[in-house]
Figure (spheres, rainbow, N blue to C red):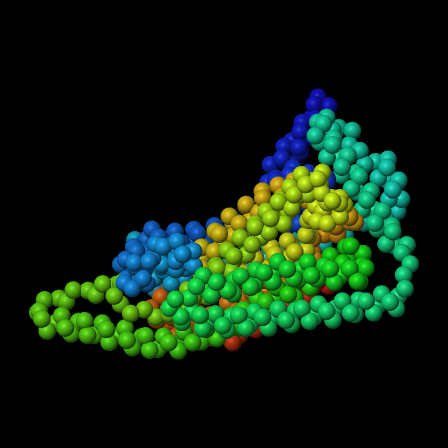
Length: 572
């Protein structure tokens, strides 16, 4: 019975392992490519789980109530395609730019009504929209900090295992309970890879080098990379400003309409390999070099993102100035319609068709469309790069090597290696775009869930079929806190633009759940005044001062981030 009980516990542990999504697939990747590549897929799986929860929040509390209990499509101007756009509203080129019927759907901010309660449940949609938008950041902050704390504890508990590394690996690595041939092959590959990782660590610890030459080359590499960062930032700003001119043209071509997304995607595709080439001058340990590469790509993406946002804010300010003119035109149109109807008949005038009502520019939907376009273009560029740069390249090398003038596998172009830093930073900044854009485009989180799900299968297939292990296989850090630290920083930086628009900019007058209010946060004061007792409303009125809340939130986040980073530095 004791033996049966031990076997049952072992089988149950195996069953629990198989129930973890993609666990066996990630173990297979780790056995052939090392723990550094596997850490990316573990991070991808974690990101998928977080986005699934965010999608449940937004879909269940915002989108579904509006679709089921809100006013249907065509009942009001914000839910109706304008008359001038209806002829082309279903064209593929229009839908591809997220215009036409997609623009006036539940995917974007402008579709939602400002009616205080909807349906027989008296559901407070504007309040729910605001609170869900805040909860997205709150939940994300909680899970990131919790994950960092758990990783730190695990790293502390592991202790020091640097003594007699090769002896331990030689005599204790094999698992004698393995009975499956495929599992045995994976275990053999894993042990071989772990020996390579330890050999690299040993070589780096005994390396002798010219310290003055090394310092000069590292300074030169950093100067070149700073020049690249400044050039990419200027290029983004120039392209975004020029796109505002193209948007006013009637017959702008496909490239003019998508120039910003194309340029940002190309910079994200070509700059990381350039940084990696320059980094060969520094000759860091692969693990340290990976962190430097991550930091540089992080600076590239961050500079591009904020340059894009600053240029986009200029466009938002133009649309806010345009709204004042359109608001007057709309009022005069409605006034003229009812006056002409009353002159011709004594009956109640017929309502004006929603498609004929003049519209404001709805700057929130414009911001959401730009972020969705950028996200979709990034998805397409990522998948096309994997397909062309990895799979087709591997097929060419594999089948043309027999009839070529030189050895394609050993020389140019050879098989591709998995780009850890580029893929990790792509995930981090894609998530930053999701956090920032979900307030203006609630359906964006659903697009990201599909993107992460397909990426897991597509990239696992690509890495096993088209990539080769790195020439210097190295062991990943015991904790993923470096990835989490970057994610925490991008979460904080994504919150800033959203907080600025909520607190400082007036919402559009004819679209979105906050239309008709001076500021978006007025929905909280309205709910407190109408739904709470008078003395509670006064207390909340003093406490809910935006000048008090925002600095407090920012200070708490800075202190938490500083504490986590200090703990991670101490552990490392």
